[in-house]
Structures are given as C-alpha cells and as structure tokens.
Image (cartoon, rainbow, N blue to C red; front, side):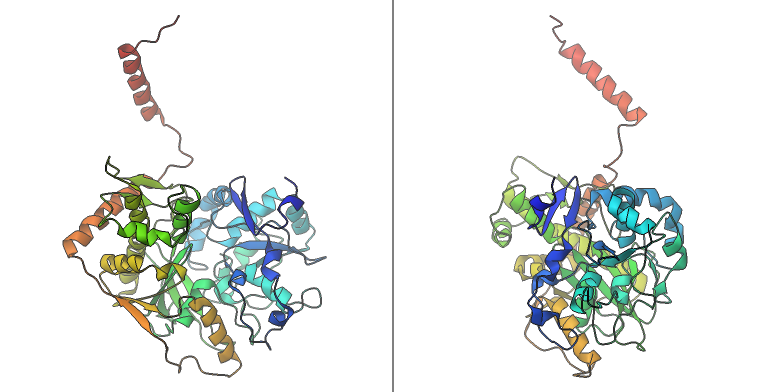
Length: 482
C-alpha cells in the first residue's frame, strides 16, 4: 500500500494494527498554536490519547507516520514476549503496572523491531520518542523553530518508563536493550513539562475538570474507552486487585504529586460503533438508546467486548469478545441493551477493586464523556453500582480540566478554591439487590468464557475428543467414497 493513498486519512486499520497520522493532529488555526499566551480552545480532534505513541527523527523532527494504538494486535505480540522478563520488575514498585498494550513502551518495542526507519534512527541515536501530547506541544511551542520536546508526569506515567515514586525516568527500563535502549526520552529533565503549559492525559484532565481534589473522590470518563480514577491523595497505593497506580495530577513544579488508582476499560463506546459499522444494527450511535429501551432487559444475553483483550482488573491480552445467552427469542434490541450493560458491568468490577484497595467506599460516582449523554446507560450504571451516578451539564470535562489547570498555573484563579458550577443530573439505583447480583454473577461467568481464546490451539486432550466425535459422526453418516 502506498503512503500517498492514505495521506488524507485520520486513521485506518492495516494488518491488524491501528495506524494514526500524527500530522492530522496539528492542523489548527495559527492563533491556536501560541501557547502558553493564548487561551484559545482546541477542537476535539486535537484531544490526545496518552498511550498512543509516535517517533520523531531528530534530524528533521517530522513524525514518522507509524504510530501504534493500544488496541493494536501487533503490539500484543510484542507484549507477550516481554511479560516474562519485565512483569515482576514492573510490579515491584518503579512503575506498578501490568505489562499490557495499554502502555507506550510495548508499542515502542514493536516499532523498533518492525519499522526499518525507526530501527535505523534508534541505532544512529537520532530518534526521539513521544506520545501524541509531545508531538502537539512540540508544534505549539515552535516546531522546527525551537519547539520543546517535553511531556508531563500524567502522560509519562502511562509510558511504563517512569518511576512513579520519583517522577523520573526509570534507568533500568529505559536503558535495557530488550525494551527501549538507544531511544532518546522526552527531556533530560524530569517529565513535568513547562510551568506555564498544562498538559494532561485524558482521564487525569477529567479528574481535575470534575474537581476531584479530595482523597476518596472518584470519577469516570466514558467515550470509546472508559477510565475510572480514584483519588488516593499523596499515597501511591499498590493495587492488589488488578488496578493501576498512576499520577492523578501535579499542579506546579513544587506542588506535591497527587496519586490515583485507575481502572481502564478497553472497549466501551467503541462497541456501539461496532454495532453500527460492523453489524449495521443502527445507523447512528445515538440510536442505541432507543433500540435498547424497546426491551425491558437483555433476555439473558451477555456481551463481553474483549475485541483486543481485557484490561482492568483482568489484564488478559488473549481474551476475545463473545455474545452468549442467546435464544430463538433474542433480537437486536437485546444485543444493543447487552452492549450498554457491558460498559456498566466492567465499571462495577473496577469499582469493587477500588473499594477493596482503598478501604474507602465510593458513595457516588461522577461521570463525564460523550457516552454519558445516554440516559439509559446512566440508569443501568446506577442500578448495577448501587450508588448515585452524577452527570454534569458539561460532558467533556477533559478540555475543562486542562484549561482550568493552565489558568491556575498563571495565577488567573486557584482551582482548589473554585467550586464546581452548573446543573447536574443524578441517577439513583432502582433495582433490588437480588436482581443486581443475579445479573452480575452471570456477567462474571460470561467473562470467564471469553478468556484464553487467542493463540491457543486445540491441545492434545481436546484434540482426541474432537477426533472421537468426528469418528462417531462418520459411523452414523458414512461418506460415499464413490
């Protein structure tokens, strides 16, 4: 496939991995690129995915077109090769993560191994590494005319290369040849970025945008992906139940780091798009609410959207999506409702893990993101979590979080003294505990059925059973050799 053929594409799928063109992120009016002086709002297309990564050749500082998404199958292959060597080290304290395609380092490893231009640049010590935020900041601060190669600690904490205690790059991970040795990091300084630029990962920006500044505050950001963050204050709690320890925010060079527990869901709103684009059940994503409301329940149908594995709290890269519980009475409305319930069940699993890790139960859940406009989804969420779900009038609080943090940096306001404003919508539980737990237990069963599909052929015992079954079939229905 020629490069020029896809020069106008924002993204496309090629050979089971996602490829994004970083140049498309920077097509902004010139007035939007004068940071930090300008307070212009950036269009939604410029929102960054902190776990997506790209490479910058230092000689020209033009991004390689190869960037790799966390849902990339290719990155999974790299991940499987690194698990044995690094899983124990990563979980001991420097980064406190499970090895997964969720993190940039795994995708970097794949790019070094499989893209000749990247491998050559790394060998010649002229390759710079950055998430999409780094690429944007480099352009916003001058680009070829002195642009800054920087990031912040929230995005850096998702690379799997930063020591989360010291907020410095971890030497053992960064210098090891099996991971990213030879790759130049964002900056020789600590990954905190410019004091007047507030660069945030999506979910951390939403945490600030929802004013979750107190220990025990929780917030969920729901779009194509879903992130649930729980503020743990200045304590970096090591999860024992499949969550990530991450940087929540650091509001200033000398400010303390606020940590959070994070639960990540790989597929949420993307499952709605799958119904629309792959199955043709709906013509527009907004139609799913009406379709799902046309039935009172899922009719026993459960949908596990493990298209590229399961993230928190399982971290199973070899899981795959399933629809189970079908009967002759099942229809597309039941499947649509099961898709919405899948988002809520995954949130319930993460919330249970957070309550166990923190010891402080959430009494309400603040939500935001485009998918939260779905009232049925929010009601199902409240029913399955058994706590109120609070939705603000402004659904996209990631942009708000970055903006108010920037204002705080230059002294326009003190965000911790500002109280959230605007109308809210509250959804309260409306089902019995018996109904809630019955549905949840069946969800757990469905999840178990989805695991260990990819990369596992028929083992010897299973193969023997299959052969015996086929033999019996042939005895009952002999094949006419003529």
